[in-house]
Amino acid sequence: MMILSIALSILAGLAYAKICTDITVPVNINARQGVFDVPALRSNIDASTFALNFTSIKFNFTDVALTGYQTVTGPYNISAQFCRPDIMDKTYWDIEFNNHGYSYVDRAIAKGFCTVNIDRFGIGNSSHGDPLNLVQAPAEVSATYEITKMLRAGTFPTVPHKFQKVVHVGHSFGSIQTFLLSAQHPETTDGIVLTGWSANGTWLGQTIAGWNLHLARLNQPLRFGGTIAVDACRASPGSQGTNNSSSDATALIEQALATVGINLNRQEAWEETATTELGDILNGINATSGSAPQDLPTGYLTWADWTSNQYAFLYPPYYDLSLALFAERTKQPVTLGELFTLANGAPATTSFSGPVMVLTGREDTIFCGGDCLATGNLGGNIPKMAQPMFPNASVFEAYIQPNTGHGINFHYNATGAYDVINDFFIENGLGSS
Ligand SMILES: *[C@@H]1O[C@H](CO)[C@@H](O)[C@H](O)[C@H]1NC(C)=O
Ligand SMILES: *[C@@H]1O[C@H](CO)[C@@H](O)[C@H](O)[C@H]1NC(C)=O
Ligand SMILES: *[C@@H]1O[C@H](CO)[C@@H](O)[C@H](O)[C@H]1NC(C)=O
Ligand SMILES: *[C@@H]1O[C@H](CO)[C@@H](O)[C@H](O)[C@H]1NC(C)=O
Ligand SMILES: *[C@@H]1O[C@H](CO)[C@@H](O)[C@H](O)[C@H]1NC(C)=O
Ligand SMILES: *[C@@H]1O[C@H](CO)[C@@H](O)[C@H](O)[C@H]1NC(C)=O
Ligand SMILES: *[C@@H]1O[C@H](CO)[C@@H](O)[C@H](O)[C@H]1NC(C)=O
Ligand SMILES: *[C@@H]1O[C@H](CO)[C@@H](O)[C@H](O)[C@H]1NC(C)=O
Ligand SMILES: *[C@@H]1O[C@H](CO)[C@@H](O)[C@H](O)[C@H]1NC(C)=O
Ligand SMILES: *[C@@H]1O[C@H](CO)[C@@H](O)[C@H](O)[C@H]1NC(C)=O
Image (cartoon, rainbow, N blue to C red; front, top):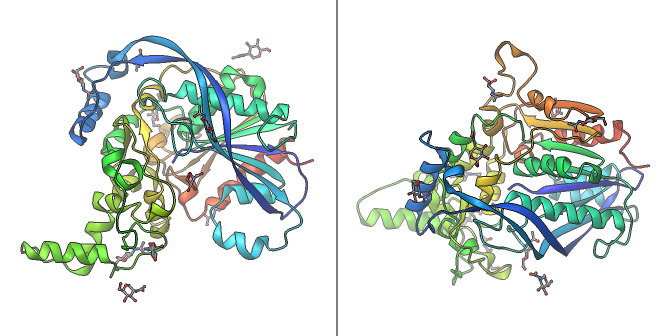
C-alpha cells in the first residue's frame, strides 16, 4: 500500500506519453535499528495477541520488546519502476488516460517530471527479510537514500543521467520515511511532499485495532503463502477485472451453505465472498501466470478484508467499489519491525531547508481521526500542526484534500490531489526547466 514515490524534475513540456521500465536496483543498506524480542507468531490468534499488546495502555509494547540496537548492513535489491516522458508517442491521451485514470505517474509525467516508484525494502518485489529485526523503517530509509544518490550521480541502473534536482513524495508510512530521510540527509532532497500524514499519533491504536491483523500468508495464501492455485480459471470476486455476481465462488458459497441449511440470496452470498476474509483467500487465484506465492514468514501481517481496508483507507461513497476490490487484491503486507519503528525513534525536527507540503485527505482516519479540520479552537488543521517539525523549510504548506480518506490515490478525485502536488513543486522552482 505505502509506495514511496520519488519524482525528479528534468524534462520540459506538456502532455507527454510515458516510457516506463521495471528495474532491480542493488543497494547496500546501512542502518542502525532496534533489536526486538517477540515470540514467533504461529497463527491469526497470535497476530491478534500482538495487536492487543501493541495497543494496550498497560505498557509501551515497543519498549517492552526492545532489547537493544544493532547496525544492519548488506546488499539487497530494491524493485523500482522508472518512468520518463516520451514526446514521440501520440497515443497518450487515447490509451493511458483510460487505463491509468488514477495514476500519479501519469500526472507527473504530463508536467514533464521523471518518476521512480519503489517497493519498500522487504515488500513486493524488493528483497524480503526477517520481518522483525531486518525490515524496519531505518533500513528502508537507507535504501531510499542510496537510490537517490544513484539518481544524482548517474549510476541508477539503465538511466545514465545525473539528475540535478530530486524531490520525494511519500504516502503514509512512506511519508514518515520521507521525513526521516530529510532529517538524516537534508541535502539529499530538493523538496518533499508528505501525503496521508500528520504528526498526530492519537489514532494509531484504533488503526491497528481496526485492521484486525492477520498473518499475511493466511490472509492471502495464494499471494503471500506457499499455496499454488491449481485451478487458475475459477472466477472470484478478487479476480482481475470482474465482479460477476454469478461467479463460481459466490455460487459455490451459496451452494455450500445451503447444504447445511443456511439459505443466502445471491447478494448475501456475494457479501460473504467479497467483503470478508474469504474474498482475500481467493485473491491471487488467477496469479499463477504471474508471480509465485511469496511464502512470507509469519511476521508479515495485513488487515483482514475489504471492510477493514475501507475503515482505514477509504471514504465512502467517494471511491469506486471496483477499485477497492482491486486494492484489496493487490495489497501489500506490513512487518512487525515496521510497526515498531513507524512511530518511534524519529527526531523531533528536520533541518531540511527546501519546500515542504503535507497533503492529507480531510476524512483520513489514521492521521486525523476522521476529520483533519477538527482542531477545536486551535485553528488551521491537524496536518498543519506539524509545521514546527520543519523550522528551516523555505515554504511549509498543509493542504486538505476534500472528500478523501487516508488512501488518497484510491478516491475519485485523486488526480485533483496530484495536480496540487505537482503545482507545488513547479511554483517552488522545482518544475521542468
Ligand atoms: C504479548 O505481551 C506479553 C507481555 O509482555 C508477552 O508475554 C507476549 O509474549 C506478547 N505476545 C505477543 C504475540 O506479542
Ligand atoms: C515507547 O518506547 C519506544 C522504545 O523505547 C520509544 O522510542 C517511544 O518513545 C516510547 N513511546 C512513548 C509514547 O513513550
Ligand atoms: C538481486 O537480484 C539479482 C537478479 O536480478 C540476483 O542475481 C541477486 O542475487 C539479487 N541480490 C540480492 C542481494 O538478493
Ligand atoms: C483467470 O485466468 C483464466 C486463464 O487465463 C482466464 O480464462 C479467466 O478469464 C481468468 N478469470 C478471471 C476472473 O479473470
Ligand atoms: C457471469 O457469469 C455467468 C456464468 O459464469 C455468465 O453466464 C454471465 O454471462 C456472466 N455475466 C456477466 C455480466 O459477465
Ligand atoms: C513482480 O514480479 C513478478 C514476477 O517476477 C511480476 O509478475 C510482477 O509484475 C512484478 N511486480 C512488480 C510490481 O514489479
Ligand atoms: C458486485 O455485485 C454485487 C452483487 O450484484 C453488488 O452488490 C456489488 O455492488 C457489486 N460490486 C461492485 C464493486 O461492483
Ligand atoms: C536551521 O538553520 C539554522 C541556520 O542554518 C541552524 O542554526 C539551525 O540548527 C537549523 N535548525 C534545525 C532544526 O536544524
Ligand atoms: C491531535 O489532534 C487532536 C484533535 O485536534 C487534538 O485534540 C490533540 O491535542 C492532538 N494531539 C497531538 C499530540 O497533537
Ligand atoms: C478535487 O481536488 C481539487 C484539488 O484539491 C479541488 O480543487 C477540487 O475542488 C476537487 N473536486 C471535487 C469535486 O471535490
